[in-house]
Image 1 (tube, rainbow, N blue to C red):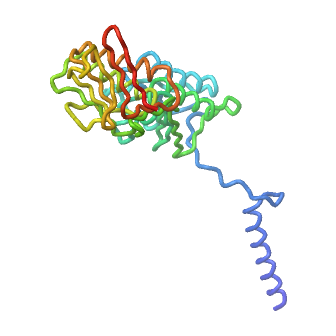
Image 2 (image 1 turned 45 degrees about the vertical axis):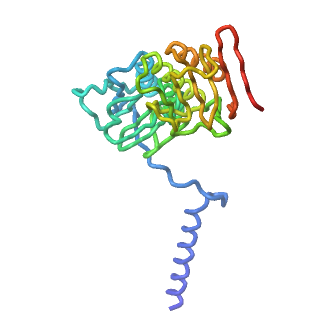
Image 3 (image 1 turned 60 degrees about the vertical axis):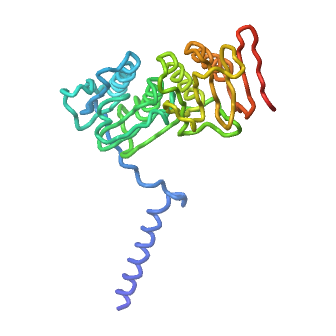
Length: 301
């Protein structure tokens, strides 16, 4: 009977010791968590992955895709296939998808406006690895991160955690305010419904300039009096070539001529957006007008 009790006590002690050893290292410190499941892209000079790029990729897009294949070959000896997203090309079980491709139609949504010029996403999803930027520059930065962190020449392997996702966003130089209110998502730029191509192009340049410096992408609409920015073909009440002013929390560009309105927008971009940094507020009462041979600026403090 005593032997049975002793044996039982011994078993309990062994269980407790085993439980303790599973939770701690040899020095009594907490052990690392169990290894994360990883997807093997290349090892022992072999891989079943294909590199995919857009069939319409420009030279920068092609360069990013080729660099993935080249670096993996140099580090592991594995020669990955490389092809495009052309609809008649096969879809492979394992792919490294570089840049904007038709593969995104399979369910993965990438918001390139939100990512911005230098932002990117790297995502492993069901055996496929997506590396995509808000622009070709962002894609190149994503490729650089992937190659530096997951391609090992020391071990001759390429591995990435299953479900891995990394998202970075472009850091913008400016914040713009109209009458103390920051320009944010949902911004609209209104143009006349009977506008000319010159005016539409000017609105697009203004939209793009604001986006590149602030990350806010405006929608161009027609004849919307509630828009935060309005391009108007009305003659400025003071006459002259053009007028820029803030009234009722709205930034207005006015000129009776399409060429004047286009020049008005370009003047504004050059003065207040291009090569500028920090915060800029256009208060109620701000006014910039060009009389041809005379320019006046009112900027209330």
